[in-house]
Length: 260
Image (cartoon, rainbow, N blue to C red):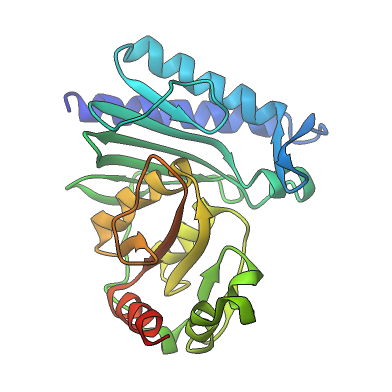
């Protein structure tokens, strides 16, 4: 991939501009529609921000494809060449109901390999980013990630309370080995919690490619595990059941799954 530094500068400026657009409308009630149900929402800002990114990307890189949550990009059936993953507002339900706890997410992949990943925390107005082989940054400063953690020493993030009830015995047993379970409701922010070392892992029952791709670049760069529940690589063309976890915690989780 050519022009990594230029891409990084452009992406940072686009995300900053997108964040400003969202903040400018913070006091206004969003126009809300249901997609697949009352818990799966889309707003006018989701659509406006994705269209903004698509226009910027297509102007600079017209030959590259975009896989976006709201459908303003391309139809992506394979990962050949350069593919951008765009989640304009990750945590839309939080955005609608809380006006906080949501993020902007963007990833760039080449032939299926993560090259660049960005998560902008709208709460703190902080941009976390990773470029393959160059480390992880918070805003423009290098960001140190803990080297390892085990289940018994920390908290676990989960995408749903359902994953700790009797219908999901394996996942409930994993949760019991930790000091507790926490939920935010935004995959991007949950991934950042792993990156910061605030949780030892994040267990998500169903994440879309744009929920995974940006954070996976960071996980790979930090040496943190990111796979499907069965240990297979994530598939960035469909929904996945995903584990993000520090190496020791990850091995403990996988061992627990195999015991049941």
